[in-house]
Image (cartoon, rainbow, N blue to C red; front, side, top):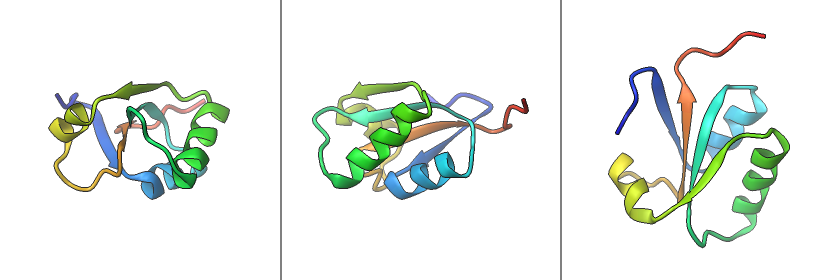
Length: 83
């Protein structure tokens, strides 16, 4: 279910770009059992930036988006929080 002030980023490249650009990411949903070099790179950045994450079954990701999410979806605040 999509929250009102939240958007989604699908796939590794868009999530990596958002993290490197300093976007506020509320949570990353990761397909259970996901592996690979790109996943490892993304996961290191998620952990390094203390971004909350959750392992979920692929069915949950498919309910959010039927497009090619590559097994990762980030929930991003529509409005960035200013410090």
